[in-house]
Image 1 (cartoon, rainbow, N blue to C red):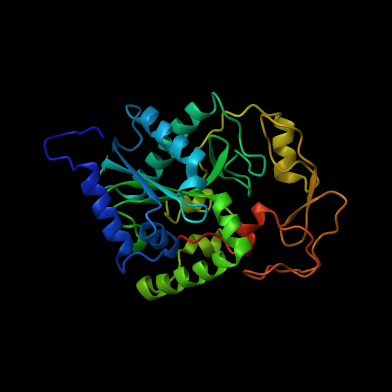
Image 2: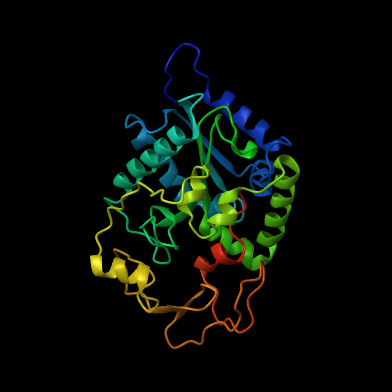
Length: 302
């Protein structure tokens, strides 16, 4: 860890503060509490969020975590990156720096790795997921200026949760219980859940920084994945188009979208349900892939 001054905290001190915060009543995410209890939280500390100086080191740390995540804990392994600065930042500033940090990481990653075939690299797509080393993650930002109490931590922090992990927990029936308990705690703590979950339940990029942005907000992330522009447009507008671009591997099957937003291979019948039921597979749904987790039950972190 680099130090920006004689009073900069050590990595051990920041980790102690982070675990204390996660264990406290102010933090509502049950999944993160489980990761801390099971010693499956991997933590690294860096100097400044959004700066180029240490992005290479963070990328190597994150890539290493992505590739050995299952060996750490198949269910609750989590990577947390904390930073010395900026402190006392507002939500707009933190959001800008969060996306700059992710952009810098992706600029390195895109030299060697493509995107996970079940996720889109385009932030405006409903099936976006941030990928490192080909593995998809949901990112949670925390900082001392957050309006949501469960995200108000003393140091700027980026937490990386595996989408593959979400899927496994969902299949085991654990995800639904964790989600319900997390939201119960969030309601008790702050009297409401994050408005983004109500107004933008399927726009993953709006949930990373935690700020309730204006309706016309556009994510600044720019993917470096080489894809046909026509394929991108079909993904966003044509329900019979491809599921999302991928830069390597065999072609994916073409898909269709049913009335509740689930993706299906062409030729398979769609769902007959008209509205999703949290934690349940709609009647007649023949295929509920990873992408549908955003529709059915969304994410654990409020």
